[in-house]
Length: 136
Image (cartoon, rainbow, N blue to C red):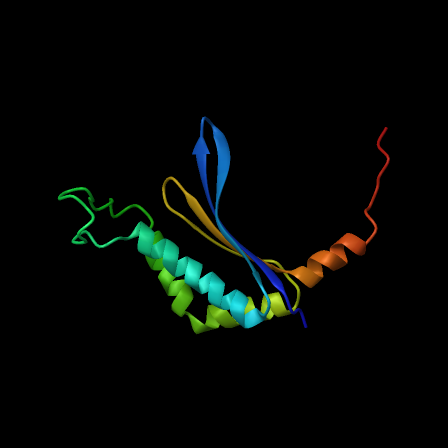
């Protein structure tokens, strides 16, 4: 059983033709349950910021406009993932088995990524000798 997990949230976009990643948060979870909680919390956090309520006091009138129906609804995808028990169980099983988990969704400009991996699995990878191949 893997006891500790590294969790990351990153947004990726393109700037001057280069793919750029913007870290949105990192957490070293001391348990599987806390890793899953943090991933769901960050997914909801992103959804709430991408899909604010237009009637909120801090937005001037007409500051927010609806996006085209052809644009992916990233907040809905993130909220659905958070509430899907089957997906949550699958993520828990993968993490418990020491495998990297990546949850990603995108709209027309940005990819949003939630990533989690076992600290124990990372340590084990470092102890395995690297494969060195002589070229030329």
